[in-house]
Amino acid sequence: MEQGAAPGGATAPGGAWEPDRLTPRQIVAELDRYIVGQAAAKRAVAIALRNRWRRQQLPPQLRDEVAPKNILMIGPTGVGKTEIARRLARLTGAPFIKVEATKFTEVGYVGRDVESIIRDLVETAIRMVKAERMATVQDRARAAADERLLDVLVPPPRRRAQRFSSPWEMLLGSLGAAPSPAEPVRPEEEEDWRRRRQEVAARLRAGELEDQVVEIEVEDQTPPMVDILGGPGLEEMTLNVQDLLKDWLPRRKRRRRLPVREAREVLAQEEAQKLIDMDQVVAEAVRRTEQAGIVFIDEIDKIAGRERGHGPDVSREGVQRDILPIVEGSTVMTRHGPVRTDHILFIAAGAFHVAKPSDLIPELQGRFPIRVELQPLTREDFKRILTEPDNALLRQYQALLATDGVELEFTPDAVDELAAMAARANEQAENIGARRLHTLLERVLEPLAFDAPDALQGKVVVDAAFVRQRLEGVLKDQDLSRYIL
Image (cartoon, rainbow, N blue to C red; front, side, top):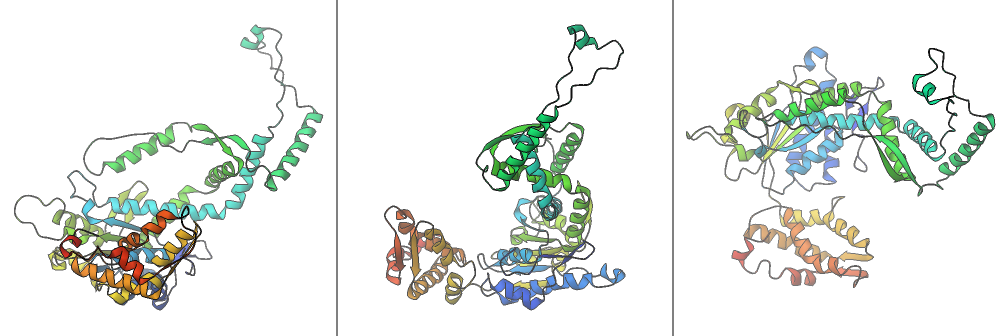
């Protein structure tokens, strides 16, 4: 969760998860902390998110009838399309997945089918819910881990083995007679063990044994390797076979030598997994996926286009036809059971430099009723990106070099010069939006990053003259600048 953000997913008194209650204005204000401009896109996603909560307050009969209003973002690269969706998911704590439309092929051809989007979304939700449940039992898990560490550091005394009068008695037993029990541990040994265990436990709590190396036995989490060669969609079959073998085969153990501080974390993770009910985790994850899942489909303009009469269009219109039923609302079979997509929010984005939104098949166009155009970034936008957001680029570079003892300071004219250079480069070459600032800053700060900390320490001031000196060759030749990011 980002600093200052409201909790991502509220937990109702009954333990069920509810979407966050942020109002649209609060959502936009939170997005403004990280993204400059693009007010229309922020308002659209804020309203869509609030409508998720509003729908949850409706009577059950009407609630199922209210479908999410999917969003199509149109704008050049580097203007904030992906960042808006990513920050939105962090705000809500909702299951979120970002996919590239160009990575999928039509069903029946080699490649990933679009239903794998929902399967991956469910796995993301399971990891989220599992992490939440494990956090609630963390104290009990750490206590159990400390007990296991004490068993390793101070092994309990062993009972003396039964004595046999001959090898034949050891092999064949006492011919039907009840075997004599092993000798019990003597009281003085038991008392000595308890005393030493209390002493070591006190030292363990005091942190005196953190660097001591111990050997622990943990479950091997590596699933059995099963590879199935075949057509598309068989990755799900591979996972199911792995699950089947994992249930049949005995749990494998392996020994690891770790310092106490690392061994405690490994054992605590293992103990926490024992304390949570995975059936409940999966059921809650599927519910969150169906009711609050968000899918961000990037580069959708790359699959826009109609068939041109020269055979099947495996990666363009064919993929659009396969995406359509998922966006419309259908049931996707996963390894954890069926998942309905009726109320999953889909946000699609593309630059649409060559293709147009009207090049998408009409049915898919109708499933994205909200269209938002993101504006190209201007010189003033670049200045704000460099200085205003909580994760501003200049703050990132200042923090990085501060680790080497360099105090980096940018003068206002240096910021203005960087913004002007970025705007000019985007005009003369390809417009790559805010990503241009990364390239220019790397070039400007390259000598400082290389010299620190060996030949550079203390305060360093970056002004407009230094920026111009480092970037003088970038925009001099317009033809050459087309090939320079």
